[in-house]
Image (tube, rainbow, N blue to C red; front, side, top):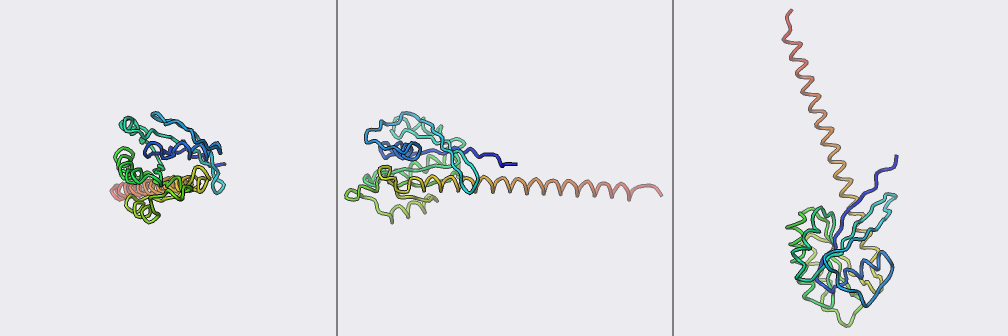
Length: 207
């Protein structure tokens, strides 16, 4: 029998204009536009992937980065399994704000969300103001992985989504195995208690 297909919710968060929508459009539709509009509230897309002969569907939520929507955006963190924290390598403030987004995610999504930082617009080599050393240090601080990407050239776009899918699959199957072990342990403990009760009954019988 085939194993059930996994369905995992993943959010893209970060400041407005860092390229969240462009990254999604590049991965899902293989398209890029210089004229994308700012996302209002949130938009959902699905991406089906096959990793190591197992299928997974990512429900990808593209969230608004504008400050006026931030109190609304937190509703998308509930039941989230993974998060891409996106910043623009030509705007240092968007990098600095990743800590804010990580804190929001932790407060409203929990500590178990898989986090991946996406350093976007690496193709703009003459305008880069964030170094890879800075990104590495931030990734350590917030317990995240990172990819340096370009929605324009497609650099590491496929790779970062495949990585997220693989990590979520590992987490899901590990949880299922742990539940199975706990269930077996509970069953064994129950049988042990029943056996002991039966022995007590037999030993207390009249001769």
